[in-house]
Image (cartoon, rainbow, N blue to C red; front, top):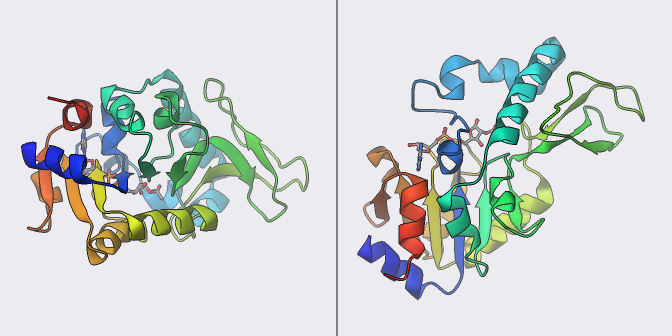
Length: 238
Ligand code: OAD
């Protein structure tokens, strides 16, 4: 912990890179690992791919409605708050929730590599997008512009990351001197490649995770523990 705090104190261009573990203690399920993780219960290709959506759009929208309801009832925890209080940091996340924003991150300041549960968009190319009320999530509905189905504005398997967001995240990571990697299995590319990109550019890597297996490189600093506890400690003045 002391080594990690010293790294943070030294950093001039710090970036955070978070995954599902960041929001786990807010009641948002992770994808891998524990027994109740999403991909241990559900087939990602049925629920998080365009192919799966085309095969059964009602099923996919019902699953997203359940995830949206869960998010509506969730609140950011002390770890989200500690992170967004670092206003000079760039925050890059794989999470499709808005808990960093609800903890106080300015709108559009968080780079959401995998999109957001907060809106739907046209499945086709007409460009229509509509905000979603998380507390009253929609089922399957048609695009008012072109009558194609609407789908969540998230990145599914086999899809490209949003180009502007990915470009901004890569640029921040290429320039950073510290990358704080919190709550991610680093299993999904290209997002996970940001860690190697930071390392190649000489940044220190600080990993905060509940799983020791997340410490993959001896050069990295590893802090074991849950995000809600560890992040406030990392940023406290003691
Ligand atoms: P994963 O579910 O793959 O990994 C969650 C990580 O968080 C694991 O390393 C856990 O050990 C760790 N963890 C769990 N609880 C924690 C806690 N309380 N504090 C700190 N760490 C904790 O989630 P991601 O790495 O985010 O993609 O998954 C990456 C992508 O895979 C997701 O964005 C999603 C998924 O398929 C898309 O939907 C495109």
